[in-house]
Length: 284
Image (cartoon, rainbow, N blue to C red; front, side):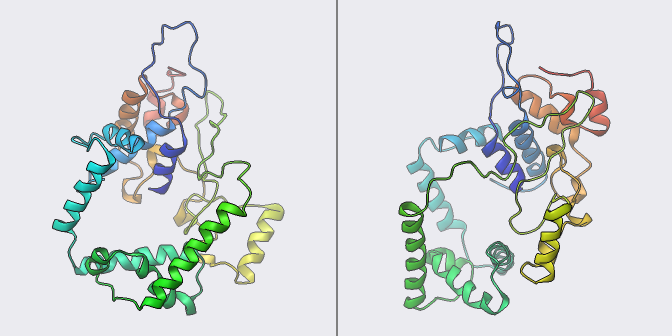
């Protein structure tokens, strides 16, 4: 899910040009990754009972969501009304809390002795309605004070002390993969937050440094080392999702992406039976 969302956040969203214009679209103009990511997300969401500002409204329209509030204030009012009616305590919420806390602690590399304390700090970030619905205990005032001090201190330090970032650090590559006409575009993320999904096995000095970090117990090997269960080879956007759905829905995803792009998706972005049927499509 993270890769799909970051892909359409990072890559250009476009399509439906007048192809009779004298100047043909460039390679970047034909980058279909955002449309494929949205199409795959839509295809996956069609199988679940899920309801997912200018930017997010456009994403919602491309997802086929209707009656999206016209302004941020209207969206906030709709959200608060829905929360008041539907956000209630439930045992299932405890499962969500456990999974979410685990993800946060892995991303922040919190050691096991500090995890109970970190859990309590996270609770202080929740508003009162959310805390009650998630069935979490109220925390003392001094923990709220610690959390506010740390977050405000980090904000001020980053704003006034850190230098501006000199280059972007997206989760997915900014450049369109450069592949031959008879090859398929396969990709790796540029970094990994909690689990090493689609992380390649590095070699040379980089591989030695990875091995050393694991041996010194500076990282959690389970959530750092590339493995077959985390699909360490590569990913293709139209395959991402639960493992049970990895091999299905490709043709429908590409058809939807082509509808958004305004032309068939080039064959370098597909594989398997769909890719073979698309080999004649070199570009829009």
